[in-house]
Image (cartoon, rainbow, N blue to C red; front, side):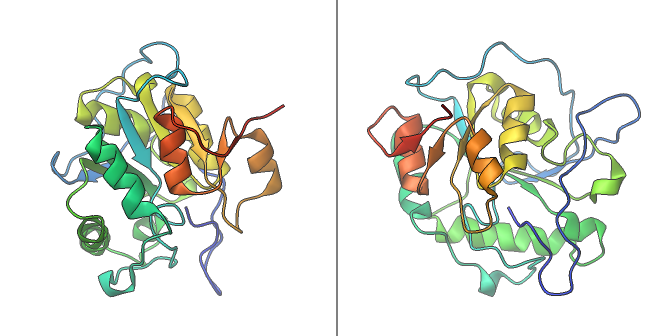
Amino acid sequence: MSRAGGAGGPAREPGAPRESPGHRAGATADGPGGPGGLGGLGGLGGRAAAEGAPPAAVLFDRDDTLIVDVPYNGDPERVRLMPGARAAVRLLRARGIPVGVVSNQSGIGRGLLTEAEVREVNARVDALLGGPLDVWVHCPHVPEDGCACRKPAPGLVLEAARRLGVPADRCVVVGDIGADMGAARAAGARGVLVPTTRTLPAEVASAPAVCRDLLGAVRHVLGRPSAVRRPV
């Protein structure tokens, strides 16, 4: 997930609080589920997916997790996969585990991107990964909107799980910053951090599990040996 808006661009703020009365809900989705807003978010189905148990779905952050972050990018030609992304998705597909993306896209709310441009970039990611992912859900809001979907709020994770027809607490969220881990925790899902040079030390220290790369993260959630660090 992008932490800053690039040179001269607005910085990425921590995100909206968890849903409460008066907070807007309005994440949008594309992919097999088609476009649409947040449905009933519902409650959490129980404890987060236990380590060693296969997840019902794996939900990736987009920017700086699946693809190299280009702040507010609307050009599909500038999309580049992060190292290990294709292999990680291939491994999940081989196990029959649904794969999705949950992404903050405040460039829409800032007037720097359109919904169509975001979907074009997402389609390019699908192509580079060998075919469409099972669900894409993004938040178009700026932090000041106080929405229920912008990570670290749980709305994107809950909506992706709803569209996939799986319990949120059996999902795993893989991302590169604390907001991704916060969204997982708030939704009752399991979080795995894959740090980049932009990840803050405090975010690494507080993450429930940390893997050095995407393929290692997927191996970890599938119960295979991988380099993983857990909080002491």
